[in-house]
Length: 209
Ligand code: ITT
Image 1 (spheres, rainbow, N blue to C red):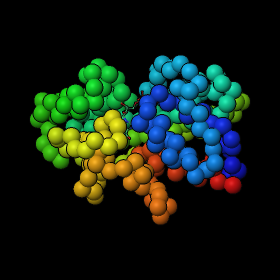
Image 2: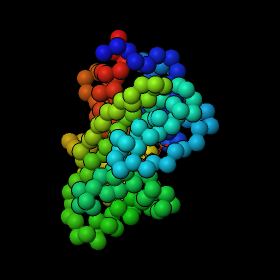
Image 3: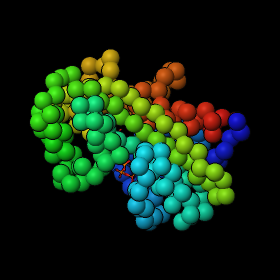
């Protein structure tokens, strides 16, 4: 496929942790990321019922407001014993709890209330959307499987990272650098995180010459 993005690209997120990761993932491709915050963009209501539809809503709102191509992520943590919750409501749970530490506590309490037994299986999901003026929006999804550990471990990353232990690893996402979490560099062969996996599909489809 032809290279679909050159020059400026709005990264339509107000989440600082995601923004850092999305900038790092875009860095090798010579794209100039401009954040929604720098442009003073208003956050649209996430009215979709899937990660993919919400990612498209965010990207398209940014393209409509700026006339520029825009890139958005909608993501979340899906906990098997909680029927996939918080899922698309992952940010809302943290907002309602007052912090991510309290939201992670809340997940542990709900697991106890549901009489769930470890290992607590969970997955992170990321949907990425690319919108361009006058073009159909393209979407890509990535997931990573793992288990939840309590108490939370590590101060790196953001959001629910300190309770998520990726399958086959001994450190949580809160205990590894963002570069290790992407898993793409240095050898280029494998993406690790949900966001890096979705990004790899996006890069293959949209950023190869
Ligand atoms: P934008 O919509 O502005 O991008 P947001 O934080 O509202 O920011 P979402 O609606 O996609 O984003 O919510 C995703 C939630 O899941 C949010 O609370 C994140 O902290 C959490 N999350 C997503 N990816 C994560 C990751 O890689 N590590 C830890 N938590 C993550």
